[in-house]
Each structure stands twice: as structure tokens, then as C-alpha cells.
Image (tube, rainbow, N blue to C red; front, side, top):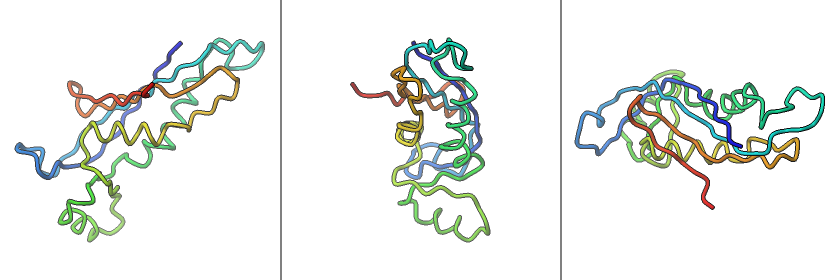
Length: 148
């Protein structure tokens, strides 16, 4: 069985070498979908009976692990030195410096790595992260999937 929880956050970025307007500083209303697989929990009398995992717990873990770190932050590539330096001049600015260009593809892969292992299999139901889908816009997204 698979379940998916969707959360949204706002963040800024730029793609420094892009040949369109994406090379300029801008922001997005991102959405992230976390897909987990596992057996349906059959333990009688517990809150999670009949679930793979409680959706509220999926949300809490995703918020703590990824969303709270990236929400209302500027996601910047370490190699984009002028922007890194500029953001460093802004007092208390929420900046996340990444080792890769903050494309949807790279952000999905980073989020997958951050979340992989965050969802603990408490009920021996073979719980595991299968996919992170990151929407940069409603029409554009990237999927980072578990490799078999």
C-alpha cells in the first residue's frame, strides 16, 4: 500500500546560468509530496490501526525535516558567489546554501535524502519512503524515487 502527503512552502532561488528569466532572483510556491509504502497496520486498538502511517505524523516529520528549513528561505547554490555574498549582508536573512544548483530536480533529490530514514517503522509494517515529488509550479515538478 502507498500513501502520499502534500505540503506547501514558499522559497526563493535562481538558476545562475539559465538562458531565461530563471537566472534572476525569484520565488515559488513550492509543493512537496511524500509517498510512503508499507503494510496496513493491523494492531488492534491503536490509533494507527488500518493505516500505513497517520497522515498527521507524515506531515509533522516532513515539516521538521524539510519544510521548516526551506520555507521563506532563499535556496542558493554555493557556487553562485555574488548572491551568497549579497545574502550574507542581510541581517538574519534565512538562506540555505546548497552544493548544487537549486533546480526542481536537485531539490527533490535533496529532500529525498533528508527524509529517507526519518520515517521510522514502529509497527513492523515495512514502512519506507518511496518518492518525493517537488512541484516548482503547478505545471512543473520533479520526482526523486527510491532506486531498487
